[in-house]
Length: 226
Image 1 (cartoon, rainbow, N blue to C red):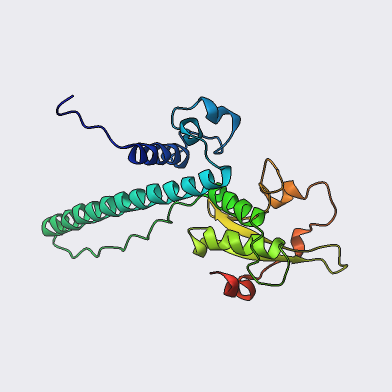
Image 2: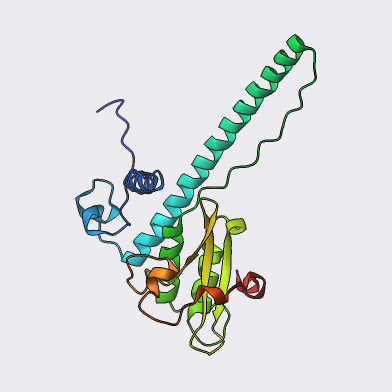
């Protein structure tokens, strides 16, 4: 039909993936990508072709990155506009009361983060047997470093070590700041099919994990981040 724009298939699929990512990032969808309920969703990429699950996850992570970038740019523009309005408002107020008002610098917002996306990344790395520290093993060190590497806000992410004095545990995991509080996360949670990722949940049925022996080991292992 003359004048009717029809996007090509690749662009249409990319738009679908970004809409899927945006719904989960903005909490309009609270399901993990690939859940059973996804098959009934009109923006589930697997409904539009046969894709390897690993490839689909990689494509979704790329779509999430695109959405985060757009969201970050929008936030930056909004903050600039707010800053301009506040600046001229203070000047106007100062002209009336005859005093100089110093503008306080507004702290930067933390960038949007996704624990779930980082856990999905770790799962892909573990399945691919990626040995980040080249010690010939694929274990908790690789998982914790991979999570730290993928987490978009490293100022609020740590590589943690728990070494029990009696030897019952020597394990690496991660900690992230959530709502101002540090919480410990098992980066292999999705890889090992746990429904939750908090350390106290994953290790709840053992006597191995004792939070008293947790320490920040980021400086020791961050050299393996690529």
